[in-house]
Amino acid sequence: MITNLQLKNFTAFAELDISFSPGINIVIGENGTGKTQMLKAVLALSGSAAWSERADEQLARKLCRIYQPLSEQVGELRRAGTRGNAVLSASFSSGQEITAKFSGTATVAKVTPRIGTAPAAALFIPTKEVLSLVRGLTADEPHQPTIERIFDDAYLDLAHQLIREGADDLDAKVQLDPRFASIVPRLANLIGGRYELHGGRFCFQPGAYIERLGASSAATKAAQSFQDSVQKFEATKAPMLSSGMTAEGFRKIGVLQRLLSNGSLNPGTSGPLLWDEPESNLNPKLMKDLVQALLELARNGQQVILATHDYVLLKWFDLLMDKGKGDQLRFHVLSRDTGSGQVRQDSMDNYRAIEPNAIADTFNELTKEQVARKMGALGK
Amino acid sequence: MKLRERDLEIDFTDAIDAIVFDQMKADQPGYHGIAQMHRVDFVVELEAAILFVEVKDPGNPKAQAEGLAKFHGELQDGTLSETFAAKFIDTFLYRWAEECLQKPVHYISLVTLEDSALLPSFSDEIAKKLPPMGKAVPRWKRQLAENCQVFNIELWNQSFPKWPAARVQVDGAKKRARVRA
Image 1 (cartoon, each protein chain N blue to C red):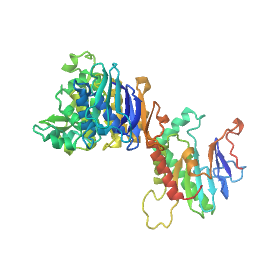
Image 2: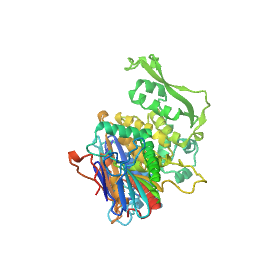
Image 3: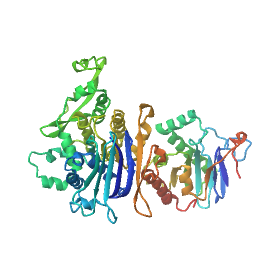
Image 4: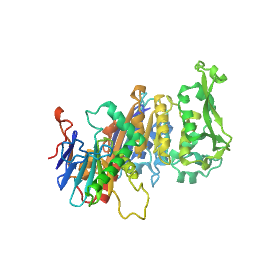
């Protein structure tokens, strides 16, 4: 779990100091204020490259693979037109700390100091859907240079996490572990089925989780054996579909399903879940259930950091959060100072305190434009 | 010309005439007299246009929980937009019968919703319920409302500097009185 991130002279940021909630963090801001760049910095600093023995070289390479600077040299990620080194620092909940520095001409990122052992790595879900790309990205003999030219490491890392083998007996997990029982069926029933890995590609199996009375054999072995009903996935007779045949929004939900089922995402143990624009390609009607699933993950100890442009997503979080259930929600606003052009950051725990709120401002623009078009100079 | 609806007051500074349209006290000037018809709160005549104005105050600090729950319930199930539409239509008929509809009509409402993002969709919801219900009708030569829009105080004041709206302190005894100045 990341507690603090500081960026200095790095990409869009002259100076950024952001403290994260252990629960849900929502980053908002207009395009070009560095939301994705900030998420990627968390990904880089919590990943294995930054904590490896040859961290100086490996972190530099990782940063280049994530941000893809033109020259393919880490020095280019230092903020243009500034003096001094680029500095990236992060603190984690078990006391780990890491700082990396590099100059504008550097080819390595000097990692020092570094305190503690490697934290749990973050998972990053990018804006574009990845499930249908997995087969190509992880083929037996891929043409790696081509793949790396097209996709940055945020995509490739996720593809590898998705094909990871794990205890794929999701039904047992759902029955035995209350953390999954409250989330996995919700996701499957939301999209009317679940994604399964067959022969290196993801397929969609239509079906639903159905509650059955009476303890199953799996449940009787468990501590929760007192439970008198179990939820079990039941496939419908509809044929299995290739993931490319299913809606892109469904595939995004499928990513979350798969990460949970193969153990890549394990609330209470995993590093932060970073999700860039969960709303992209998602039907707004699915948003409420997605927000409920994310809140449920957070209630089970999963730190979530997401970037969004979407009012509906923001508003569902505001409405569905329940302080009685221990929900902790923090909003982080990135904005560009009109005078200096520098990116500023502010954090607040209350939706109504968000300032400036680029999303609400857009709705106000709509109101004013309608007045201008339909009423002209009336009242002015 | 200042018109007040409970704790909210709007000053239509450039109005030729401005009336409390839903006056239901028989001894007051401008008595409406038909309880069966829906009524907007104010009708304002300008040089080149007429305003129908409806005021709702869910953001009143003194609002009771029961009333707020009713408001939000009606907002959610669509009955609030139906009521807003019915108020416009019945007021339009009433003013037509009075021969007071010689200028284009704008239906603008002041609803003290804190969350301004809800305003555009609520405006569209009301507009959709006004004839011709969003349909293209080639036989029609003119439209009932030039504009149908809902504002909160902040956006109202930004949009209409000549008609400033404000929350005013009202004495308990005068709380329900409406003042025309």
